[in-house]
Amino acid sequence: MNAKNYADFFETLNEDISIVEYKKYFGEETLFKDPFHEVKGVENIYNIFMKMYKNLDNPKFKIEEIVENDTTSYIKWIFYFSFKGKKKRQKFSGVSRVCFNDKKMVISHEDFWDAAENIYEKIPLLKYFIKLVKIKIKN
Image (tube, rainbow, N blue to C red; front, side, top):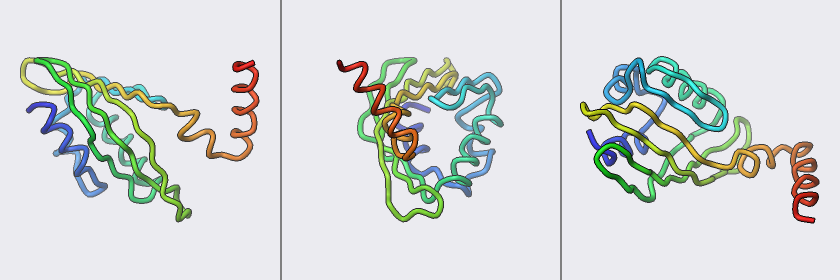
């Protein structure tokens, strides 16, 4: 497996993919981190994505760019989704740093994206407080 195969997995990811498919990429020692989670192991990673499908409508990743060397890849992506019960389609971009072992299995996957701008600021009460903080920092 290489970064392209892994990126293809994310572009075709859906709620019907079983944990068996996840095990082609992740092992029991794989670390996964994003702004909301930090877990270890394929079952925990699988559960994160199953919760995503439970809480969001039609979440999809579109891969924009892949930069890789022998063991580390950076994958730039756009994430599309709708909040449950809402029709408005949302999107934001991020980058994943993915490290592979000598067997080409993922040993770590760390996502970098702005949770404040892309999630918290979409919640009316939080949006107000985040704007206040931004104004204080700016001035």
